[in-house]
Length: 158
Image (cartoon, rainbow, N blue to C red; front, side):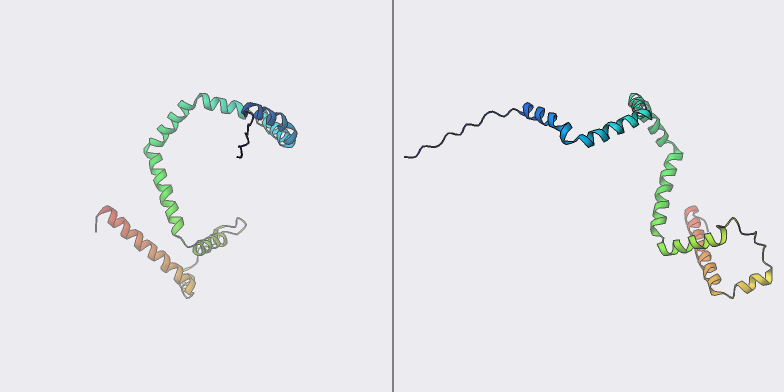
């Protein structure tokens, strides 16, 4: 009858394995270690470690100050306004916003342009012949109409 072969493995020493890996690390990762030392030196020269030690030492005071600032009415309004502005920017078609950016640049963007003299009444009326002007005015009028309706709804008045 066959007998099983006894397999005896020597006990594994995890500390010894780690020590051997640690001894090999400077050889295997010499370039990375030199870069790390250089980075640490630059952080030290610029006082980053002192700043971090100070921040950690005063962490309770920093957190308390940040919480007090975040609880103020102004901060709450600012956060709400930022969310609303984000929603507004998300709802605008990028092509339309690009058109607005171009229009702003061409009309208001140049410092070298001379001051535009206000047009006369007849000149204004002749500008209404262009459908681009009428289209823009219609867009502004629609915006003002919706804004007026929102103001009326918010105030509950007629």
